[in-house]
Image 1: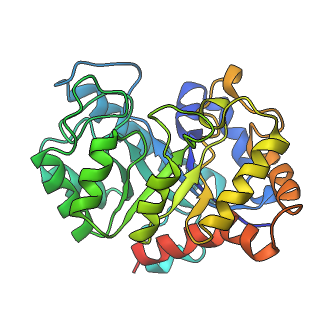
Image 2: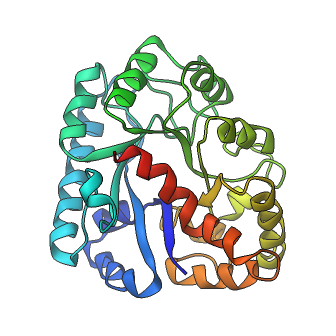
Length: 297
């Protein structure tokens, strides 16, 4: 069992309490080979035009990521040569400090390789999933994505509104993925994707990470969730991935026996009741690997 996780909030978890870094010591023992470190640009909610705090927390997160690389013998992946043996892909969860394309060029030089356009608050790039004024992708957002794709950054549509989602897919056909989401057919909230939206991602050769929490997958028991996920994997064998959102789901919303990295073995064992080894490997590792291999060319 090898794991490629499209979204973990471990970095924010460590910023909150540096002692939490001890969790990382076990990653290689539990087969987590590659994972996206989400750099969260907030400490709370800030004013719409307040650029200072999101920028400070983004830069702080990048610096801590490099400290983790040094202290825990991980490798941040920045290019093709790093990809095979590297572990960490740096991702930003919300472009709240971006006002021009020049910020994108700068964070690229700092090692960022994945851009989450938005979090749970509108910004100048696009509207988020629960926006009261769903304006979709802005002109600045279009310019930012165009520049990002020139740099071969991955574009993450997690947390986007439906209008943003379809605006992006109508204008761009490459480097698009969703790092962590639930399924509307299980939990009908706009934060989640519908199966039709997953199909749209599959049409542009993107990938979709399934997040683990009852806010994403309802309050079903793990065995029932696995049964549904297995059908989804069969329907989209080259698209579905793990995007756990470990350390980002509050305790009251966690799924029993699937709330931290060491629990992935439980998911693996249950999926074996429904799927071939090849399909499970696609979901756990290969689909994400093949997508990001095209990013690091």
